[in-house]
Image (cartoon, rainbow, N blue to C red; front, side):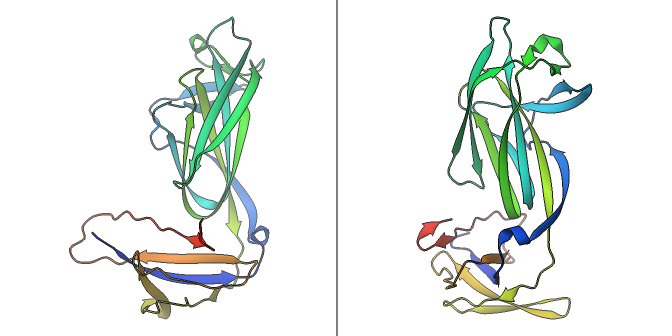
Length: 236
């Protein structure tokens, strides 16, 4: 489908982000493309780690807001190895890649693999990612084939505080589309790649954008789409 059109509702709130969230709930996540897993014994309990693949990033899908904690452990496979260096890359929502490097990592004296033939896990190193509202996709991969690295993913969800959002109209184009939800009329604005929406706002503030794809009779199945948001000319 060429040049698809979208509907958008823009809401704004003049509050710092830290005031939007409260409470927490942590759970372990499994990568969407995980093929194998490694049982790791920590304090007598079995924890599941997933090996990272050099050519295929591990993919985590999660709905924010919340905090994603990635616990990584390098893989000692030889008795001669006492310290190892490794480098990881990650990308959030298809944006630029980020590099994290861990040096002189030692063997863990308290953590073991359930399958002793795998070797010895290294001391855990963490990557903490703060995720905002909405759906997020995180990709993680090692910088080299060796040494091997395994990761465990813990997501702490923060609940959004109940707040009153204020609707904001774009400067142009103003092509409103009224939708009815629970007997309430909601004003969306149609936009496309050739006719983007432009919003002018004074900050600091939090801008929340609700969007919907317009489905037509000739469209079948699930539709994938991506939005690009720019602030003062910079892609966010």
